[in-house]
Image (tube, rainbow, N blue to C red; front, side, top):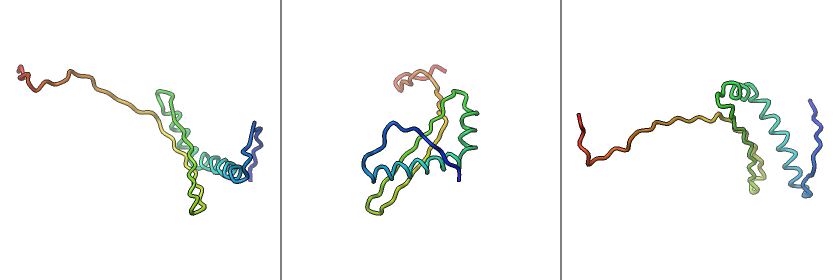
Length: 93
């Protein structure tokens, strides 16, 4: 199993939060590895050079469940500009 060593400026003092942070860090790296090709393609195919990567951590304390999610996307946008229609103005042609 690969191993990573990190220099971290601070860790949570709470043992529960530290355990969640450590488990989530491992899960995040696994999610990156699972979707490496898609993330690389998103970065390469993006004309605007803006790719968003989001990591979220969900806690269900009642079920003692930890969910880590990695989302990635390319910002897309399009627009059409035109005069505002006036229903009181009859068509000219």
